[in-house]
Amino acid sequence: MNIKTGLHGVDETMRERVRGVLQQIEAEYDVRVLFACESGSRGWGFASPDSDYDVRFLYVHKPEWYLRVESSRDVIEKPIDTELDVCGWEWRKALGLLKRANPTLIDWLDSPVIYRQNDDVMARVNAVSDRFFSPERARWHYRSMAHKNFRHYLQGDEVRLKKYFYVLRPLLAVRWIEAGKGAPPMRFDRLLQETVHEGPLLQEIAELLTAKQRAGEAQYGPRRPILHAFIEAELARTEATLAPSPGKRDDALLDALLFETVLGHHA
Image (cartoon, rainbow, N blue to C red; front, top):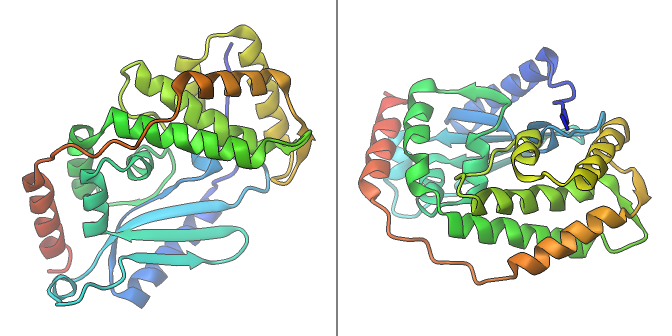
């Protein structure tokens, strides 16, 4: 079954608005944005017509920022309005998270919606990101996310349609990881195509996708027994485990990338 998903209108007008916000952030905080992407349902490919925009970015300061006795805040958060949410991580923080195999950061790197990118720097990051991916840590992350969202959002007789995908996507990511495919893709359609082969389940997800993409973000509907049975079976099958400690990683690659990026982009 061919299930298509869409990005629902990340058009040039919105792209220009996001680029303008990123320029304002650079001026206000005296930083350089290296990468900016869409991280929410528009990046996943199952947005509703009224879905907001979740922009996530990575930025670098001038060299003197890194030469202070006391460390400074390493996150920039800019909830612009109900339509646009913008949040960024400082470059040293981002590389530290990459070293610790942070699944969220690795997810951003695969976003199909890129608003800004320094090609040279991000090519170097993407070239080494696989070395820092931890299947065990990612599996724990996605399984925990699915369990938490299922218990929190999908226990009533009427549930928000979008919340099914907050459970389905991480569960399919677990399947992807268990199949030895590496880091799960951000796009839901690719994830679905390569991890689900049960006909009734595919049909149920296809119907839910259609309903979700036509409805508003707050749309409720009756709980779906086929999806609930699948979710409960997968959660039982995978079981909960303790988060594994990240294995030892070679700091030299990331140290060099930090050093060269900081010096090279504010010279």
